[in-house]
Length: 296
Image (cartoon, rainbow, N blue to C red; front, side, top):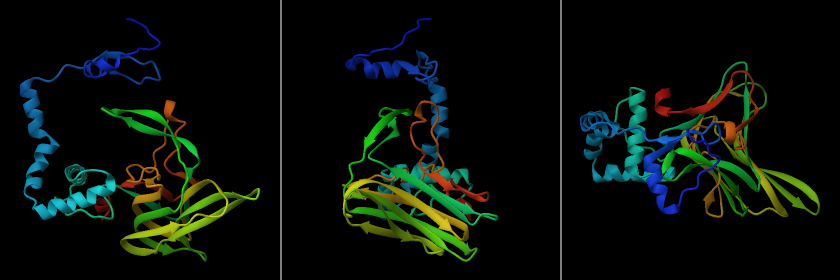
């Protein structure tokens, strides 16, 4: 077996290499090997007949033009097309033994972040830092099963638009209550560090709703900002999705679709910050992604 430290592939041969070869974890004892053989025609036909696409496509074809337009409108919030969202939602419904199809929502799509606070806890505080530069894990185009490290430079501009869609079922516990999504903006003015909070307050009991806030440019030099999800003096459940922290025409919120809000990165990707870092997570408090209809 040949042992190499690196392999350089000419640009014109990269597509051929990706089709012919597959590579294991390139950071730890990486192995390059030929792609596994393709299944026979009979096996491919059987797999196609059992595929999720084949199962759901009759439901899709039965939808009216107006119904398909509704799926297209909802899919825009997740940067998907209508068929992709329909498949994703259908797969989640099948996994949870739910009826389908059901009209989509413009307030949540497929997965949502869930915060659960039970006794003895009565609080949770999650943060998401946004310094000038930080690493993210990004899928490699054409090889969706692989990711790469990308160093982002978040050039700050204003206004900063905060937006969140949420559903709450919280019960008061204690004398002081607080439930909000907010940004702590760090500025420097005349040699002094200034931290200012800009908050979207949550209603403790409400169905899916949209809340937003526009933050104008503060005085001084912008150093960075941190996003927080803060619940204090409550027990119960909060669901949220389509989270936004938009400036310069880009939404900089990490995991805005709430696909896996509890995710942490390991091995060579440990340099990537978690989507949400718990600053206060007492026993009884949890946060994770879930499929909202499955909670009923």
